[in-house]
Image 1 (cartoon, rainbow, N blue to C red):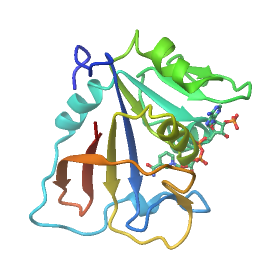
Image 2 (cartoon, protein in one colour):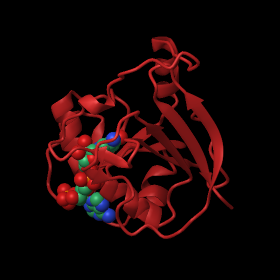
Image 3 (cartoon, protein in one colour):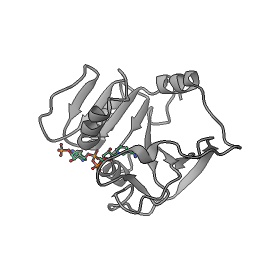
Length: 188
Ligand SMILES: NC(=O)c1ccc[n+]([C@@H]2O[C@H](COP(=O)([O-])OP(=O)(O)OC[C@H]3O[C@@H](n4cnc5c(N)ncnc54)[C@H](OP(=O)(O)O)[C@@H]3O)[C@@H](O)[C@H]2O)c1
């Protein structure tokens, strides 16, 4: 979705995370090797670096919880210069100009702070913040990338109190590296 698009609310909040087959988004030791490709699925598609760059350019801003922020800094910050809002109640220091911090009401964050400035808003974790967004019905789309691995233990993607809610499947993409991306829109 380009910057000029958005839904009837004028913005789209897309929850995106990578999950294991058994529904974990992080290991207890926070290692991330499980997210790397292992096998080859011949019938899958592959995407070029240019296609990835074009896709990422269409994301207007990222939103993340403070623990995801701290881990992303350790990993080398994969979010470039795209505006990023980190939700925290602590006084953290901004590591980059593109990062700002927010504390307080999440509906206000989306409707008052973000929607007037951004259309294509990506909520990129972690589990705690995503569960808060889902509980408040602030998520319009879910994109789950399923890694071909069972972890057995770790941080559950939807482990908290998420009420029953239907989502409409919009797209499925199987990649050559064995990962599968499932896209859903909130059922109306
Ligand atoms: N597999 C993936 O795609 C993926 C994606 C993202 C993250 N992760 C992993 O997930 C882990 C982090 O997830 P997590 O669930 O532990 O933490 P998180 O959601 O990243 O961050 C939780 C923190 O965010 C703040 N927060 C969350 N909801 C809030 C609210 N409603 N109001 C104010 N502050 C709020 C609080 O910060 P303060 O405590 O600072 O107040 C809270 O401690 C990391 O290991 C990360 O690498 C994986």
